[in-house]
Amino acid sequence: MSAKRTPWWQPALAIALGAVAGAVVAELGERFGLTLIGAPWFVAVLLIAIGVIVLVLALNVHKYATTDPRKRPSTFVNPRLAFDTLVLAKALALAGAMLAGWYGGQIIPTIGHIEADFYSQAVLECAVTAVVCLIDMVIGLVGEWLCQLPPTEGPENPKMKQAAQERGVASAAAKTRH
Image (tube, rainbow, N blue to C red; front, side, top):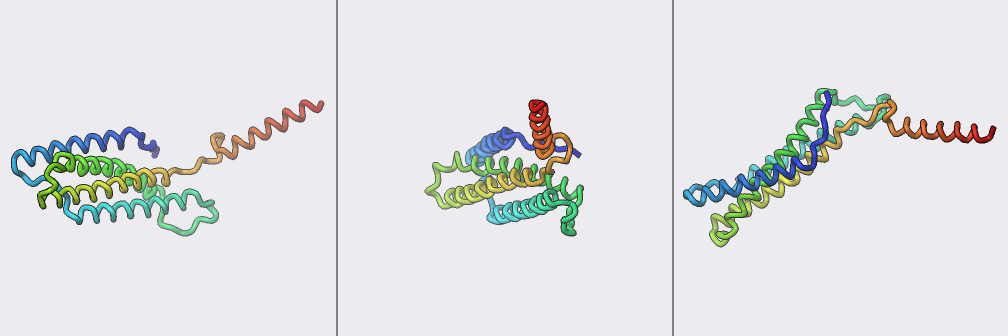
């Protein structure tokens, strides 16, 4: 299985799309008298828990992948779990970005009514949840980095490149002596 890193523009685009969607829904809710803004506090707590779980899994994968195979502790990491952790990290990064935009976007049209109790509470809920979602986005991106495998001992390995370079320098030095 092969996976590529998430490009920088995907979370940025997700934040922008989420902000537009959140602002539109908040504006429509305001126009039609519906309460579509805000986030219950358990949503922020649940998102924090998901972020911590993904980070712990990614740290376990990283520890396993970067430890010498002869010295690896007996752990529950297997290739399938490592790949699933990578997918979870990628999903968390993009979902966190989209939701940060969504909750941040809801703040934009409602900030003008912050003096009302309902709107001040909704803005506070959205702000806290948006910050948690940004933290989840960062955890997802870091988790994705942690799930990278170190280079194999093939020609692309930095150690092999360094050894080849040293051999080239040594052979060039030997040729100049003769």
